[in-house]
Image (cartoon, rainbow, N blue to C red; front, top):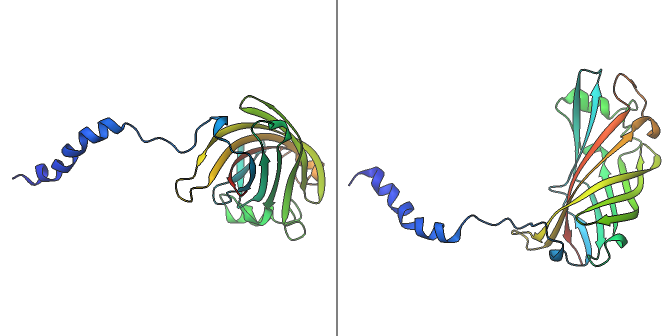
Length: 205
């Protein structure tokens, strides 16, 4: 028998089963009814905070902070009572160039030796459907300022590996870095910094 035909036989046999089962379903679904009330911890293996600035008016460049920690307390019946706290390890910055990363760690920018973390602590939540405006205090470079996160609920369900109930959110904000004492090369490097935040939380209690 032709070798190619032998290899194809298992696939042919499985075809009816695959057709019946359809496409695999994602564990996370945008369905608020799947959110269990309680306290959640940041899934710091997959959460990321990206910043973007404009360089000399030529192009944008960006970096990513990984391995944040923190918690979310939420009751889907009372979304405006939700509380979130995030700690961002400034020293975990990743960029596309080693020299840029090193420069970002200096006192010109993040002064990571003196301020190794940044934090965000919510003070108010205004939820509407699957979106919310989360107001909170951002502490960066030793300076605390109010920031509003435009937030979208992106999914809830059980993590297929550790079986933990998980909820995910995407948020954006724009801050002025000079307000946090980071004025190096403004306006050649833009004062406005766009934050793009993607975080999953796993149920802790």
